[in-house]
Length: 321
Image (cartoon, rainbow, N blue to C red):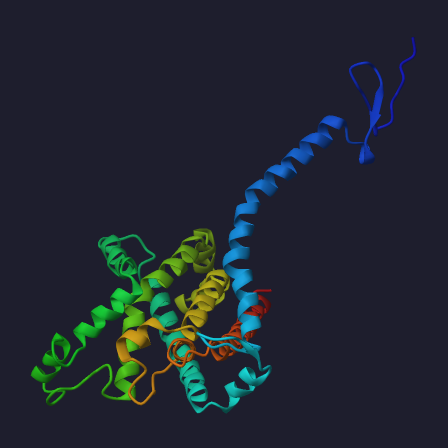
């Protein structure tokens, strides 16, 4: 008896009747695919709800507030685009923007150099490396606000031991405030705090990238007679570029959004010389009680962050090709 060959898009049910689905899928395969899609949707829904509730909705609200004069207590009135034009006319905002850019440049260069140096120093397994890694990473366990308060006490000219040590060494005379005495000392104290708190975190990211580089590549370079500097420049840095991109993005973003260290350690002083943009946003919202102005500055800062991150990641991606 001759057999009947069915086309690929045709199935046979239990009673012998044929069933067809677009693309040649059987009913069982189609239902399984739909079940997997629904399962994936169920897993993604909670995350989508959280992102929408705590990111997208506040973002839209901030954009809407930036188009209004929005007092903390009172009725909002539309004043677009006054909140944006006032950003360029405010002297405090201009000085805070210039200081934030300088701080970002200084902090990014120093923090990256320290983190990369520690990662290169501690990547090899030898005696004492485990202890040193733990010591470098340990500051990560301290909250940033708590670390700022700790440095405020250590550097205090009244109760802190650092100024007493400097006087004993003959480096300073009398009571000297390292956090508000001068613009240079206030910035230096803040830079020291951030280096102590975040060097271990960034070192950990770079160390993970270093340990992911195959040892065979270094062995081949040594056989070819490459020096340590050539190996670092031609092998380590190119293969470490994804980790470098992540670290630099975190450093730049964190520096542009700096708030805790300046608010707790220096209070923006002396004479607003260490006032960051986020501190200006805080003052506009909770000191002057003008939420619309604060929202306008926030939108401008967000746009700057997006541009900087896109340019930074684009440049690193082009160099990796």
